[in-house]
Image (tube, rainbow, N blue to C red):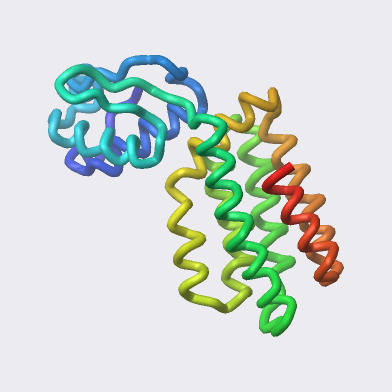
Length: 206
């Protein structure tokens, strides 16, 4: 674990730990000790504690008051619920996009897919999560419904935990993730409402 330049920023600590957890450098079941993290990153225990609370809200760790912190994996029921919610909102956004077609998204999708391939080559789960958010976020934004977009993005913080747990359960990898998004982009390019509805549903809920 490398030292941070901005030692007083809890988000810097959070991002460092998030990347290590998502890349499985810190495996599920591992204990995170505040004092050890604080010493390694040259920050205060208060800063570490705040970062761990954020990671708990993302379902990457579990905090036990006055005891310890453990790296967790999102359980299957929670994962299914998050996927269902995101799928429902994204289907609505896609229908709005198809109804109005105010903007094309092909270039945004292609850029996100390229970022996914780069992330797969580097074994960088956090970068893959960010590329996934950019990919689907471009479709949601194209729908033009601001409140819908806000609701969809409210799930962003849990997508890292979801993706890590899903890939492990499916014994899959980041290259497979990129391939799925290439396939979905092909369907989106048809602008066929029925095909897109089915493809998005399968993408999230198969």
